[in-house]
Structure formats: C-alpha cells, structure tokens
Amino acid sequence: MVKNRIRELREENNLTLKGLSDGLKSKGHPLSASSLIKYERGERNPSLETWENLAKFFNVPVSYLQGQGPSVEKAKSQIISILHNRYFEGSGMMDDEVDGFLKATNTKETPFDFYGDDETDYELTDKIKVFWNSHFAFIFNYPEIIDICVNFDLYSEDEIAERIQNVIRTEWLKQLPKSNAWKIFNAKYSDQLLKAEMSLNSAVRLGTKSDVKNAITNYEKILNNLKRDLI
Image: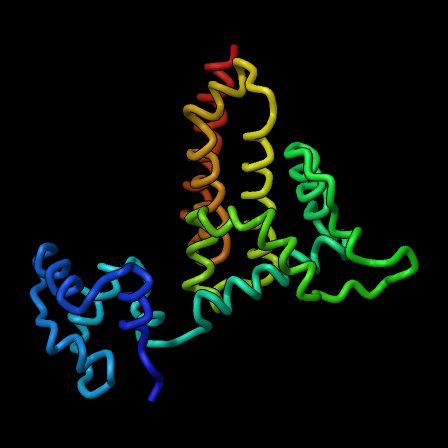
C-alpha cells in the first residue's frame, strides 16, 4: 500500500491534527483529529469525498495526496536537474534567460565557473546544486512551477523547461528599468498573458480544436488590449 501524504502536507503547513481538523471544519468539512491520525497511519482509508475535501484544503490533486508520483522535494530536485542540463546543452533559450537574469542581478558567478576550461561533462555536482538553489529558488514561488511539483508526471521535460524559462524571464524583466510601457504591461497584462499562454498550451495538449481556437482568440484579445493601451 502506498503511503499517503496527509501527515507530510499537514506538517508542511505547520498544522497539528487539531489544527487540521479545525481548518476542515471551517471549510464545512468536519473531520475529527482521531480520524485524521488513523488516515495518516493507513489504519483507515478515507472515502472519496474525504480525499477530495483534504486535497482541496491542501490545494493538491487527490492522486498526489494519496501518495502517487514523486514527492515535492524530489520533483524540485528533478526540476533543478532539467534547468542545469538545458542550460549546458544550450537548448531552447534556457542559457540566454539564465545569463540575462544573472547579469541583471549583478551576479558575478556563472554556472561555467564550477568547471574547468577543458571540461565538457557538466555533471550536476553538489556545489552547482547549491548555486542553482541559491540564485534560482524563486522559481518555486511561481504557481506554474508549484503545479509541476505536485503533478510532475503529467508534464514532459520540454513543457517543464519552457515553464522554467518563462518564470526566469519574468523575474529577469523585474530587474530592468521601469519604462512607462513596462509599468502598463506589468500592471495589467503580465499575469494575463502568462495565464493565457498556459491555457493555450493546455488546450493544444489536451483540448479540442474548439478549445485551441478559443485559447488563441483570448490570447489575441489580450495582445490587442495591450496594443491599444500603449498607443
């Protein structure tokens, strides 16, 4: 039997059993602390409704709560590995986004500083892991990366890499001088366009032709509104 993550998520949220019980009750889903500890220990199996209520409370999928897929910490480790590998492969725009962010934040150290001039095998060592986690921990504050952490198996490596690039670019742009155009974009359109792009990617991957068409129309509408505001 796969061990569920009820206790893990409860402790991550600094909740006692009573605290979780009270929190569920406040949401209209009363559940005693004595029942919760039996669920955590695997002594009893929650009903589907209870699984759903707990998953909604912690804002994770039911499957993740039930113990399926990698843990958040393992998913974070794999995301850092993808960031590392894509940077040194020079695939996509990962190296440009990383270098741009490091330059914008006046970071003197670069990933290549951890390897000799004649090295071509850029192994993900403990030292370079510290570098990535020190300078790029912010990616795990973004909802689109948090979603990957709890739904890791649903995403391809290319999709994960694309999201990493997007959030690094977003953080990089925050460091640039704030022109009037930037202020307009950031105040009204940055989040809208990011959500529209995510919706379009999701529609292309999982939706119908109609879903894709609607997602494109929504994206174009936001761009047209941005264009109108900048004129």
